[in-house]
Image (cartoon, rainbow, N blue to C red; front, side, top):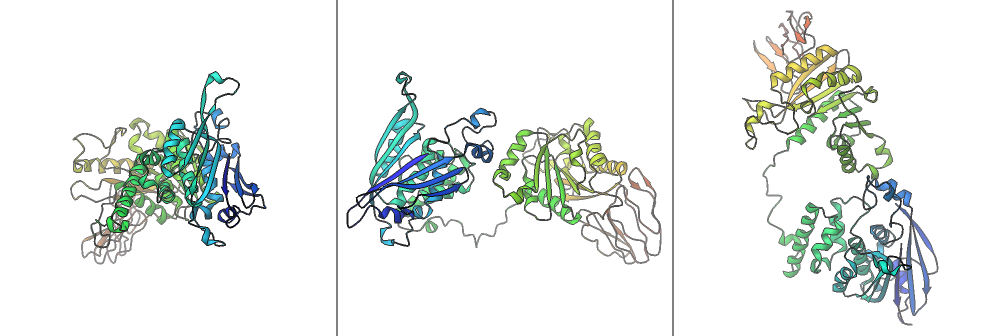
Length: 565
């Protein structure tokens, strides 16, 4: 990719002042590394009357493919050949725009410490791009650049000079001439080169709105093709386009009123606005799962049925979790998770902590062995009931992590959803939804068969009649570390203290503490028998501990009780 910037001057104002503005000396050829190749800056001519700076970008096609991971035109996963054979190394695009911002960063910001008097002064410029993709043709090039004060030459390039009857290609040779501040001219190019190409080589994230508004300050809010520019620059992502258009309108109104944007956009006083926004149930679920994993001391974690990677992303934010594996049967979900997590741009040290793999929980998988914890968050209800034993064996029997966390909807709570018709499940793909008793019965049987103790807890606001919207079970392998404790029960006087967390633990003073433990040991003066995951016998003793999924606080002259499922 090639671009030249030329200016003319006089003895009093030599053209070589361009070197000061660009922060690149005319007597030297310099090169700079970019993410996708090498940028060279050189001056084919430099004297007092005429000075030309050239930016040559050598694109490494292999680096483009490796870093792109299927993003941008020519990088789609279903176009294997197109990933290597395309116009990216030759035609101006977002690659050249990024190189402009990287190599001429100070010039684009209008900074010149050596000659500050040069900044803000319009100078005669001629900018030439030999090959520019123009989706919309030469007419669109005119519509984009002419309102900015440029004299525009957009010469269509023939598809093949040997066969003129084939007509023109979608490329043009672009020449811009006019008097303009160099910083403003560079910002025009930075925005409009990828707009004309109508593609970007990287994923367009929300921070692209800020980049667009910074580069478009002073000209984009008044451009007649504003909507087209914003839509194409943001890769037609509707949410980002709406945000950018709203902010541009605020800037236009502020300028018309000769006021600051903050004075216009003052309908909400954040300091006075004390209304609490409800926390989404999905966020509550992740927080509950993370709390269990933290308490369990897990470092190596499996997210089974990871979907689009929301929990994997939350785990990555905490240094405790040193190895994270997300598994899902859907390749589409894994591709979306990879995009959301930005694995292709993640620092190497961080990337070593996470893997995304395809797999089915209906089959045993040796890759799942040896982990501290596994999470099945909103997964079991997507499995046909007749296949649940296979999932159970693959996770609890073969993989066998020390801790397993399972969350699933509580069907009893569905009556509280006004938008959910009676008798309907929450998601079209749900094969079933369990009541609290059904979930506890299933979890207790699984725990008994595979040597786990299981405790239960609510996720979300708990309704006194129908319970919480989501129910959580924490399985801890017996003989391993203690399960996750909830809040302690209150001291009882000939009464019962009940834990309200993931598992209960109570202490009695003249009474007894009560905690739920299914498939575990029934504590008391002596251990009770275990039959089908239920503590059958409660022993009386002078110092019997109250029950919990992990441990109970000792009572004083009381008796311990096992609570059946």
